[in-house]
Length: 371
Image (cartoon, rainbow, N blue to C red; front, side, top):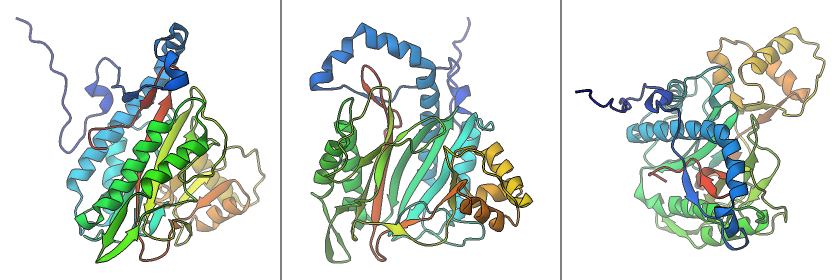
C-alpha cells in the first residue's frame, strides 16, 4: 500500500518556507467579497473571468506573500509579552519573514521596516540600533509589517494591547477598517469610503483610567493604492469625510488602513527618524561625495524603491553612514519618513488589510482567522 503523502506542517517556531508547505505551488485565496449594485454582473462575466485567468501568476505571488504574513503574525502574537525589548520583537519578526518567504534579493522578502509604534506614535517608528525601549503592559502597539514576492506587496497591520481597558479603541479601528474594505470597489469614489470609515470609527468611545474619550479618525493618515515595488502608488483612501472624488479602478491593489485616536486625530512628524525610501520617479542625480555614491549603490542593490530602516543598513555591514544618508536625503534621492505622532499621552490603534479589486470580485488578500 502506498501511503498518501502528508501535507507538510509548519514548525513552532516557524522555520519551513511557505513554498514547501504548498507543494502544488498554488497559495490560498484571501477572503472573497462580491461587488454590489451596478457591479453585480461582474461575478458571472466570462470576459472578466478570462481577464483573471491571465492575472493568475500575479495573484498567486501576492497570495504567497499574504500566507507568509499570516504565519509570521500568528507566531509573533503568541509570543508577545510585556518586558520584551522592541528591537528583539522586530528582529524575531523580520527573521521569521526572511525564512518563510525564502528571502532572495529583490525577488522575495520584507517590503518595508517593521513599524511597532507605541501609544501616541501612530506610524513609522521602529527602533534604531542600540534603542533600549521595552514593551510595557499599558502600551498600545501597532505592528505594521510588509511582505513581497517580485515586488507584489502585502501591507497589513494590527494592534496589540495587553490591558483590556483599550479593547474599545482596538475595536474601533478594526471595525472601521472592515467597513472601508466592505465599501471599497470598482468605480467607488475614495471620498465615500472615507465617509463610511469615519462614521463607524466615531461611533466608539473608550474609558481610559476613569476618563471618557470620543474616538477620532486620524484625519491626515490614509490608506493607499499599491504598485509593484511601490508602497504608495498615487491614490489615497481617506479615513474621514470630504476626500477626493477620484474613483477606484479595476485591477488596482489597495491597503485599507484606519487609525483610531484618543488625541487630536491629527499627526505630525516627531522623534528620531528610522524609515527611509528611495524616490520612485527619481532620475539620475550626480553625487559629489564618494561615500554617498557607495551608500546609494547598497540601497539600489538591496532595496531599490522599497522602504528600509537604519537597522537594515547595519545588518548589511554599513557603518558611519549618517552623513552620506543625509546627503542622499538633501539631494532628493532618498526621502526620510520620521515617526508620525498625535499629542503626547494619547493612544492610537490601527488595523490594515491589502485588497485586490479583481475583475469579478474583491479579494481581501491578507485576511486571516485573527482579523
